[in-house]
Image 1: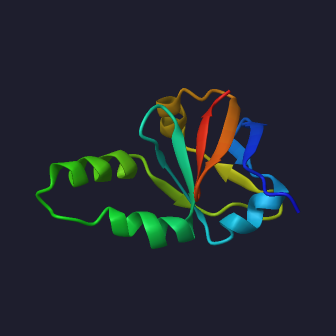
Image 2: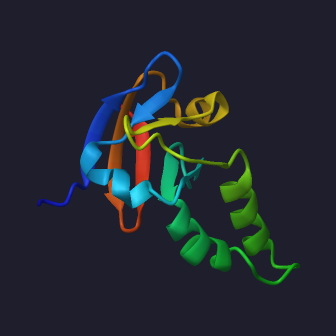
Image 3: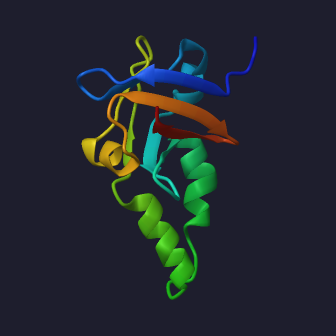
Amino acid sequence: MAIIDYFERKLDDKRRLTIPPELREEFRSGVVVTRGFKKYLHLYSLKVWEDEVEPLLVGNILDEHMAELNVQFRTGKIEGKIDLKQGRLTIEQHLLDYAGIEHGVIAVRAGKYWRITAK
């Protein structure tokens, strides 16, 4: 089976993003959605967030760079589960506003996470 590294979707009226069936297993552990470095969102599996991102956000309490990273990735962060049958994930309005997403979404794999932008 081919690896999916890109998909486009439209959010439904309840701000739900449908994950392609081929990717749903990747998010079985849960999902984390955060602000990105610029005006886009990051979508992580809960496993990647807990195993790889969270440990990197721990550091010297007085390190300003570490503090900025924590603010960036924790402000508005949501955790949840996708409906494995229909593969839907609700994205909070404040995150959509941050990324300028109204209806159309483009998702691109960026290593072990997905970058979500407006279409």
